[in-house]
Every structure is written in structure tokens, then in C-alpha cells.
Image 1 (cartoon, one colour):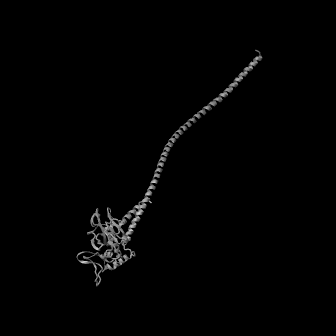
Image 2: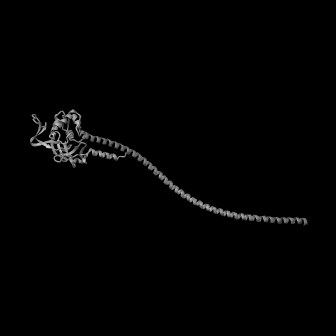
Image 3: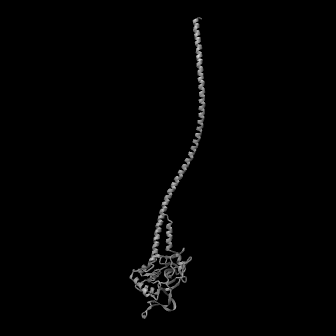
Length: 373
């Protein structure tokens, strides 16, 4: 081998050695870099795994919270649905109540209207008795003349002769005649003082109501007059009309075998109606100092004087042959007074005892106060 070849080979060998060293040097750098890179990657992977675990933990917790929230939301939705249903039911009930209230209010208004009409009717009835308590003035000339004659012809020596009043009612131009009627039971059948004057007749209750008005008007002019009726006696005459005058020569009217019955000067007159038997009754007049203003006071009339307005005959005192009604079945018993008319009211005995228009008026007013407006 020549030197040139050897030299070339040496150079080639040197180049190879130098190249291998260079390559080795490069490989070492790469290995170091790879090792550093691997360490970095491992750290990053470890960190990533740690982050993943943390995130996963949070995710699991979030899932649990979401599940709990969803469950709670479901519960709340159920509550809301139940509340909504209850609200709908309450609204329906409220609408029903409104409709029912409207209906009840209509009924209340109708009842209140009916009670107002009843109240007005009762007040008219009460006014009717007040209006018929006295004789009307300047109503008819015959009535005015009659009252003048009562005061002049039937009063004598401080007394009013009831038989004389009855006589003038029948036998003068006033001309009020008695006709038999049935058992009194309805105030609508009362004609009233003016009605009896206009028609010229009346049954026992009309006659008694008119006589009560006459007595009240007489008392208004002279409250001190004694009231004298007549009653049967074994002998003697009771003078009816005219009153005695000095030197009289003309005829006069008397009840034979009768005497006077002085009842004093009681200040109040009442129409009283009583049972004759279970099927019939009669009305007359009673005089008393008791001023009956309420149904509970009717028993105060016990002891009052009673007389027959058709003739002026004395009937006795209440509590004797006639007495105030008390107890069950009273109206069917003879001589029991079950209806009384004062100057302001009518009192009737029934299942609840004595009741008057004023009592019914109070009950109507109480009923009205209980009705919603």
C-alpha cells in the first residue's frame, strides 16, 4: 500500500473517529435533553393527574349537589303543583262563596223588604187604634150634636149616666143601631169609629169601640165625672132619659126593678171580648184606673168595672163573672176575656200568652237587625 493510500486511509479513519466523537457528543446532548424532557413530562403528567383527580373530585361533588338540587327542585315543583291546585280549589270555593253570598244577599234583601212591609202594616194598625180612641170632631153634624147632648143631657150631679148615652145613640139623629155579629177574631173586621158612624150600625165590637171613643171624649172634657151604670134590683126604677128637672111633667124612660151602680171615675176605657161558650163570644167595655201600655200589663185589668154599651147595664168587676184569660184552652171557657183593645194597641191571648201589635213590631225590628245589609 502506498503512502498516499495510507494517508488517505488514515485521514478517512481520522474522519470516522472524529465523526463518531461528534455523533457521540450529539447523542449525549440529545439524551440529556430527552432525559430532561422526560422528567418534565413526568412532572407535568403527575400534575395533570393530580389536577384531574381534583377536578374529578369536584365533578363528583358537583354531581351530588346537582342531584340533591334536582331532588329538591322536584320536591318544590310537587309543592308548587300542590299549592297551585289548592289555590285553584280556593278560587273555585271563593267563586262559589261569592255566588252563594250574592244569592243569600238577594234573599236577605227580599226578606228585609218583606219585614219592612210588615213593619209598615203593624205601624198602620197601631195608628188605627190611636185614631179610633176618640170621637172625630167636625166629622158629621149629627156626631157633633150627639156629643153636645151627651154632655148636657146625660151628665147630672157630677155623674155620667151610661144608659142615657146608649139611649141617645139609638134614638136620636145620630142613630147608631146594634146588630148581632159573630165571635170577634180579626181586627180587619173592625169598621172603626167613622165606619160605624157612616153605616149607622155595628156589631158588639164596633159598638163597644164607638162607646169607648165616646167615653174618652167625655173624659177629655170632664175627667172628674163619676160613671154610673144600672143593675137589676128587687124594686125601684133607674132613670134613663131625660135627667130629672124641677117641675117636669112629661114622660121619661126608666129601667124597672133596677138601681144605679156607681163605678167611680176610672180614667181608662177598654174594649174587652170574651167567650160565651166554645163557639161564640161577645165584646163589651171595661173601665179601670190601670193604664195598660204593654201586653204583659193586661192582667192589671182584673178588678176593672164592666158594662154593656148597648144598654148601660153593669156587668160586675173583672175577676168575678168575667176574668182575664190565663192557661191553656182559656179561649174555649165561658166568661174568659181573650181580647182587649186599648187606646193604642190590641192585645190577644194565644199559645204564647198575651201578645199585642207592639210585641210583633219589636220582633220584626229584631229580625231586621239580624239581617245583613
